[in-house]
Image (spheres, one colour):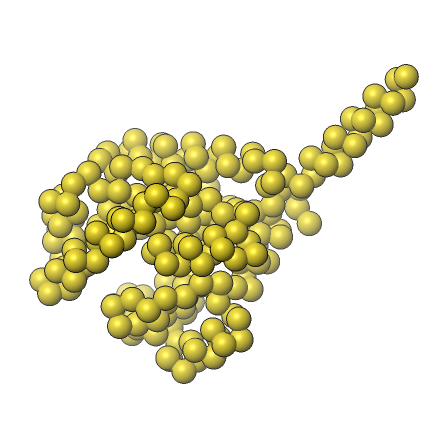
Length: 213
């Protein structure tokens, strides 16, 4: 086992608030971070690669994984199933590697309430305003007006769960928000719980102290 226990770093936000961009920046900042590749039943979008962007599964295959406790969390969003495969996450945590999740509040709560809950760091990203949130969604040029409307309607439900997260950042300036995010991750890695090797170190100090007597 590593001297440091890995973290499950959860980033959540309504669509357009910036969690995907911040996730990419965090992965570039620390190459040791591993991104949890979600499984989904939706069809691949242009340029998406199976196993890199998502694990694309049929609905039957996805439900089998859930029935066999193979998903750490899962949810039904916009007509499709999404979930985080359990095994690679558990292996990474035991090996001292942090795993980054870009998931919604439902998935976040499932992870926080799981056996790995004590090792989670949950962060919610808020937009500076609803008008800016819509502007960001429209500027992507990826979704139809109908889809953007659905995302906007869902955004308040997502925002209403901000209080269940460890940290909340208002993304009104991307560079400043990213600096705050790095500070949070760096500090949380030093939590006593994440450093199981401290027990043996303190015992060693105790023995050295006894030897001086």
